Image (cartoon, one colour):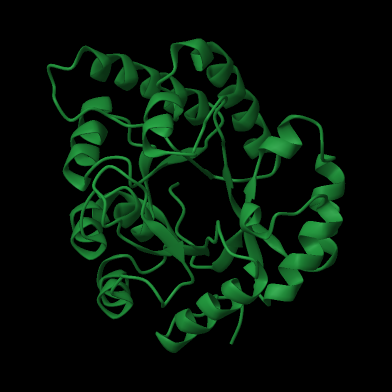
Length: 282
């Protein structure tokens, strides 16, 4: 079954933890009951899986989904991520497919039914020869996860909503959907977050709560900012979530700033002000 529970949590990488113990301590400092867990430290053996599970369980904290990162990604500029991001680089394709299998088995062990990742810039032009290469790679990765009963959610932002809709239709995999990140639409200059959410609503499996300013310079990054201080129209956004996506987990993501925990708590308060509370809390 596709994920249907409604939780408010935080992305583990936003807290920059150095160990399972550090993750738990920082997660408790946010006041949030659950996390989307970056799988790379567990997959590479840097964190012990049993210890991670036990420390979270001991404090009554949950893991609602996982995140898979790709080899060789360079997010320093738009051009660098366009070249190195997701499944695009031929040099890393085989290792990324192996990683997908390892993450799928790890997700199954952790009893996670959803994994998100960046596919890479997906060409809109159907005549682009790279398009079918990427679609074929996406099908293979989605199928690897499906074999373990795990759904996948493609991160938004590196293409428009319409391009992503076309890709989902063309790969034709019922276990593939969208992890909607409104800030990414602004950071990459790929469309209005609310209109894009409306277009993709039927495919959204999870939402990242993140904010940003568009770049005034075409072809360059926008700026990620604390939730509530950027250009996302949160009133309209949350009204749409309530109307069309009730039950989708909301995970706060913060990838910049010197006070990650404070910014996460601010975002959590904004969610509460809009009537969103974790289903396990009053």
